[in-house]
Amino acid sequence: MEYLSKQRYDEIAAELNHLINVVYPQVRDNLAETSAQGDRSENAGYREARRRQAKTISRIRFLQKVLEYSRVIDPDALPKDRVCLLSRVEFTNLSTDARMKFEIVSPHEMNLEAGKISLKSPIGAALMGRKVGETVEADTPSGKLLLRIESITFD
Image (cartoon, rainbow, N blue to C red; front, top):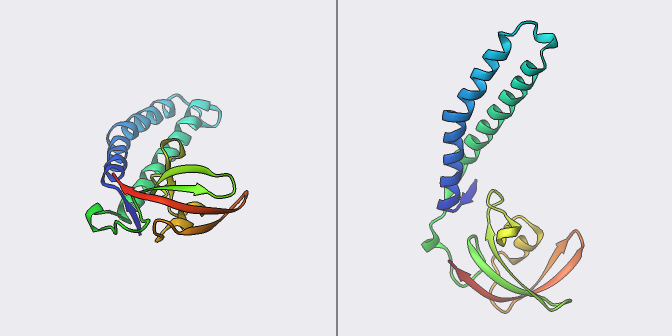
């Protein structure tokens, strides 16, 4: 079970709808067109159309599974005093005194450039359930980080 924000759930549903109603019919028509061009064994266009069809079908099935096993989070039901999904956490790396601010999201919403880290990432997992002022240790690929939680907010 994955939990998504309403915005991300709607984005995934819109992408799925676009793939089913716009992209797949184009792929299907392209495949039929290239198939009609003769010998398929030497038809590079046909092979490329088949690859594109397979990629499109794979993406459609993946998105269908994501939506099937996802639930939209009710932000009002989340605790406000602890780090949880959809909370924006400001913390200090105690070894470098660098301050960072990230929003904790599901893996399907992760986007480092937008300041969103997955709750399953080493830092996200270490912060989950903690309160302001607590110091946590995160095992990252670059080594252990000692982090102090400075603030928790919700958008």
